[in-house]
Image (cartoon, rainbow, N blue to C red; front, side, top):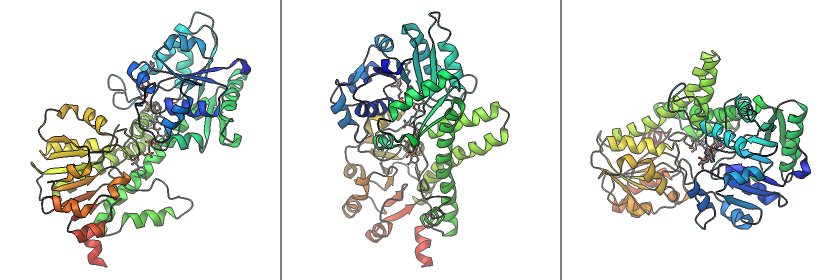
Amino acid sequence: MVENQIKTILCIGAGYVGTPTMAVIADNCPEYKIIVVDKNIDKIRAWNSDSLPIYEPGLEDIIKRRRNKNLFFSEDIATSIKEASIIFVSVNTPTKKFGLGAGMASDLQFIELVARDIIKYAQEDKLVIEKSTLPVKTAEALSRVLHSNDKGLKFEVLSNPEFLAEGTAINDLQHPDRVLIGSMKTESGIESAKILRNIYTHWVPTEKIKLTNLWSSELSKLVANAMLAQRVSSINSISALCEKTNADVEEVSHAVGMDSRIGSKFLNTSVGFGGSCFKKDILNLVYICRYYGLNEVADYWEQVVIINEYQQNRFVNKVIDKMFNTVVDKKIAVLGFAFKANTGDTRESPAITVTKMLLKERADVAIYDPKAIENAKLDLADYSQSNNLHFYNNAEDAIKDSHAILVLTAWDEFKELDFEEAYRTMKKPSFIFDGCNILQHEQLKNLGFNVNCIGKNLDRLKDDE
Ligand code: NAD
Ligand code: UGA
C-alpha cells in the first residue's frame, strides 16, 4: 500500500472505543476523511444527532467540531469498506455464552463477520487494524479469513489495542502513555506498522509509539487489564482484613503506594471493579492459559475475578447484617449505578449485583444515577414488573423515607449532598454504606447516621483512638 494514497480511514464499530478514537484521529489529522460505521443503525443515527448515544466528557465538543467536515457516521458499510484503505475494527468481543469455552473464552463471531464483510465489499488491498481487545493469535485467524477471498486481494493485519479508560477517554487518547502497534515481522508488515505510526505521530511523541510483533501486542493488552484489575482485587482483599484488625485500608494503601516500586495508582478500595473489560479479559487470559495446559497460571489470574465477586457479596452481606438481618420492604437508596464516575456505562457494574441481591432479599430499591438511569433500567429489565424497584431523577427523592443510603459510584455530586436534610427525611435508625469511601464519615456520624464504609471499622477505629 502506498502511503500517500491513504485518504479515507474507516472504523467498524461505533461504540465506546471506536467513536472516541476516530474523533481524536479526525481532530488531529484534518487531511484524512474518517468514516465510522456500525451494524446498529440507531446508534449511527444517534451519532449524527444532537443526542449522542454515550456520555464521555469532551467527546461532544470534538464531534461538533469535526462531524460532516472530516468525521462521518454512515449507515452504508459496503461503500465505506470500498472507499477506505485503512480499516479499524472496533467491534465488541464479549465473553462467549455458549459451546466450547462458554463463560471464559472471547466470542469472536463479530470479528469474523467483519472480516467477511471486508472481503465481500473490498475491491483493492487494505490495511486491517485490530482495535478490539482480542485473544493472542486472533490476527492469524483474521488474516486467514481475509485471505480466503477469491479476488486476489492482500490484507495486512495489525494489532493496535486501545488503553483508554471510560470517563477520561479523550484525555487518554490525546495523551496516551503508549501506543502499541503489532505487526508481522515481514517487509510488508513492518511497512504497514510504519503507516499506522505516521498517523499517530500527528499528536503522539514518536518515543511513545512502540512497534512489536503481533502476538506481544495482542497479549500486552490482556495483561495490562489483568494487572490493573489485580491491583484492585489485591487492595479489596486487604480491605476485608482491615475490617477485622482495625487497620484503615486507606492508610495501608497510601503507605504501600508510597513505595515507588509499587506506585499509588489503582489501589483505591471499592465495592469491586466493574466495566465491560476487566472481567472478560481476565477470563479470556485464564482460558488461554488452560488451553496451553498452564493450570497454575490460570488459577492465579482467576483468583482476581473470584475476589471481585467476594467483595460485592461481602458488601451486601454487611448491609443486611447491620440492618438487623432483614431488609424486607425497607426502602434502600442506591446512589450510583454506572461502573465508575463520569460515564453512563453500567456494563458489569457492581451496582447490578448489589441491586439484584437486595431485590432477592425483598428490599425496596430506589435507584438514582446522574447519567446511567436508562442503562440501569435495561440491566434490571427482568425486574421491571417488580413493585420493589424504582428509579429516580434526583438523589433527594431516592433518599426520602429510606432506611439506608448505598453509595456505589463515586460521582462528585454525592459528596455534596445535604446530608443533614437527607437524615431528616429518612427512617430511623438511618444507615449509610459508602461503597466508594468518598463521604465524610465522621461528619455523617455526628449527624446521627450509622455509617459503614469499606476497609475500616469506623466504630472500633474510634474506640481505639
Ligand atoms: P461497544 O459495544 O460499545 O461497541 C461495539 C460496536 O460494534 C457496537 O455498536 C456493535 O453494534 C458494533 N458491531 C458489532 N459487530 C458489528 C459488525 N459485524 N459490523 C458493524 N458493527 C458491528 O464496545 P466497546 O466498549 O467500544 O469495545 C470494543 C472493543 O474495544 C472490545 O474488544 C473491548 O474489549 C475493547 N476496549 C474497550 C474499552 C472500553 O473502555 N469500553 C477500552 C479498551 C478496549
Ligand atoms: C479499564 C482500563 O483502565 C483501560 O486501560 C482499558 O483500556 C479498559 O479497561 C478496557 O480495556 O476496557 P475502564 O474499565 O474504563 O478502563 O475504567 P477503570 O478506570 O480502569 O476502572 C475499572 C473499574 O475498576 C471501575 O469499576 C473502577 O471503579 C474500579 N477501580 C479502579 C477501583 O475499584 N479501584 C481503583 O483504584 C481503580
